[in-house]
Image 1 (cartoon, rainbow, N blue to C red):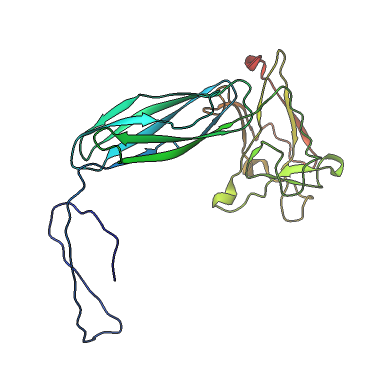
Image 2 (spheres, rainbow, N blue to C red):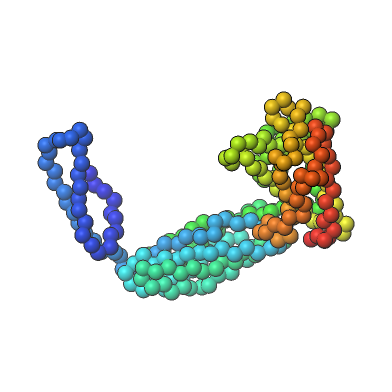
Length: 277
C-alpha cells in the first residue's frame, strides 16, 4: 500500500505490522523514505468562526497564519474578490518565523443597508515563493433589528420557532390562552433536558419600552391539570444591549411570588432603563 506523505520531526520511529488472526507467517517489504519539511509552507485558519451583526456594525475575526516551513517568511495578505460595499480592514503583510504562528485581525464593516450575508476568501501568500499560499472562507451574516415586536405564536407551525428566534423551546398549536398556540418545553431529569432557553430577535426598544408575557408551569403527567410546585421552578429573563454579546438579568423568578396554578399569569417587567437602545 502507498500512504500519503506525513511530515515528522526529528526522532526515532518504529514500523509495526500486526495481523489477525494471530500468529501468522508472512513476508513483507517496507520502504521508508524520509523527507524533511519544505522550506516554505503556510496554513491559514479562522480562529473566530463565522460571525453575525446588525447592518452598520463591525465584527472582528482572529486569523491565524502558521508558517509550516523551515524558513522564516513574510506573507502577503489579501482578499482576491469581494463586495465593494463591505469594508474589510487587515494588515497588508505578516512576518512569521519558521514553525511559528501569528494572529492577524480582520475587521469587517457591514453596510447600513446590507440584507444578505457576505462571504470572502482570505489568503496568505509567501513573498519568497508566490506558489506557496493558503486561504480560508469567511462568512459574515446580518442580524435583523425589528422596530416593534409582538408575538402570539399563532402563525408559527407546531414544533417550530418563530422566524429569527433561537433556543430549544418550540411552539405547540394548542394549550395556550383560550387554547391558542404556545411556546413550550418539557423539562425533566438531570441531563440537558433539565433546562431550556429561548431568545427573541433584536428589537429597537423605542422611547417607552414595555416587556410583558404570560406564563404557566404545569406537570407533564396529567397535563395540564396539575400545577408544578414553586420550589421546582426557576427562570430568569435577560436583556442584551450589545447585540447578544453579554446579557443582564432584568427579571429573576421568585418562588415566594409565584402562585401555583393551571392558569396563565402575566409578567410585566420594567425595561425603561433600556429606552432607545
